[in-house]
Length: 79
Image (cartoon, rainbow, N blue to C red):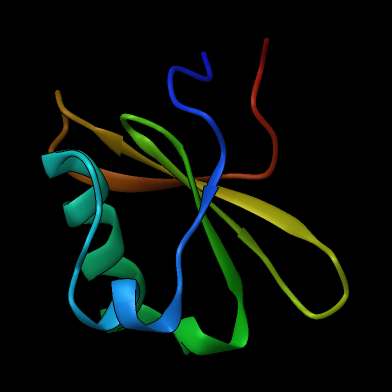
C-alpha cells in the first residue's frame, strides 16, 4: 500500500501545502482545519494517506476516500 517513500513534511511544507497528490492536499486541509497540526510529526505515507505521530509516539493515519469524498481516520493500516 505504501506507494511513496515515507516523507516527513516540514512546517514550511505544511504552511505552503506542498504535498505530492490532490488527495494528500485534501487530507492536509482537513488536518489543518481540525487539529493543531504543528503538535504532530506529519508524513506522506502514500498517494491517499498521511501519517501523523503525536508526542507520545502514537501513530494515526488519515485516508482520503475518493468514493465517499471524505477524510477517514485509521488507527492502523491493514496489509
